[in-house]
Image (cartoon, rainbow, N blue to C red; front, side, top):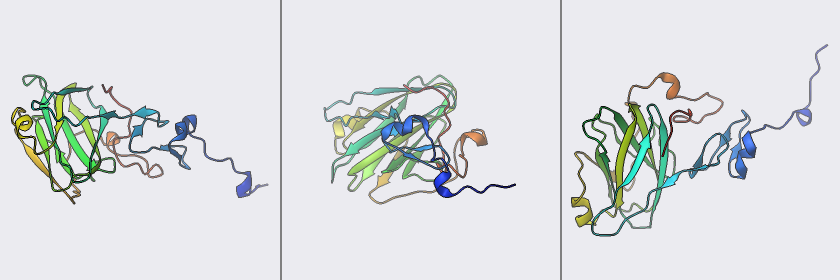
Length: 210
């Protein structure tokens, strides 16, 4: 005999640690986290990059193991601007990192406002117009363990910008959203999630971030 349970008899979805009280528990048992936090239970606070206003920029070191992914956040005041410069720590070490940037949402390989994806792991995101809002930077270690230096300064801080080496500048316009399928060659399972999860990209727990 086949017994059909009513909706009221079905157990509600269960997620790890109830998503730490800050995420939404989806029917698939997966936490949908706010853009400030990540991890299976939304307990991991993404590292914040601080906007520097001193004449000479001070770099922050970001490290990631091979095939790892990490998010970093920063906030710009209304009518503000930014220049986010990235420099490979050791130029003679073979590794490759790609960088995706988006405003108000987690960047994916198909949905981002700006991207630096070259073999040199160097570049600068330069805002154009009003850059006010909450931004998320994704660092993806495509090949080898990655260590980069980053500096976040106002775009009009000429002295700080001139003190930073970078070989590529990507301009981030006030209203821009890019969809692009080009990315580093990671295994397919590293680039997609299940349809029920609908979390797009960069959700696999691989590598270690610092």
